[in-house]
Image 1 (spheres, rainbow, N blue to C red):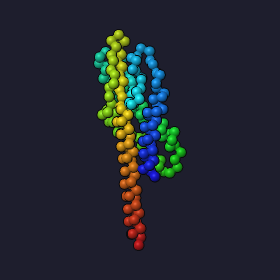
Image 2 (image 1 turned 180 degrees about the horizontal axis):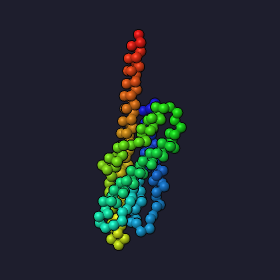
Image 3 (image 1 turned 60 degrees about the vertical axis):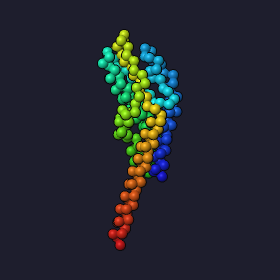
Image 4 (image 1 turned 120 degrees about the vertical axis):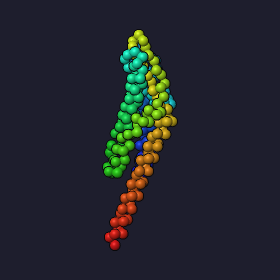
Length: 173
């Protein structure tokens, strides 16, 4: 039961990120920014950011874009949990959903998989624009891996709990 909930969480998040989110972002255009700024693609999750300054602002803009990606994914997880799983009554199901919603490995995942699609520095405005993307395949694999790990942890927890109950019942004889 809980294992299927873990996979349903991952599936719902992936669906949300690649269907609803992309629909909302298609027509964004920011005056003064490059044409690719804030644009999504069908097979990537992308985040854009900028930094003021000379060429030294490139690294800051890259970091800002990675931070923006982290925020986008974290907020999407929270939205999926709120919209689909806020009415759970079972405490073990709630614990699973809470464990899924707190992704401690997300910064490492982003840093290791992010692709710098676009970097543009404008000398006249002293701004650097950056767009980072993560492929749909990498994101899907990562979320499925997380769901699988959660399901495995649940199974191990249940088996440990069962062995304790068995020990207690044997000791009572």
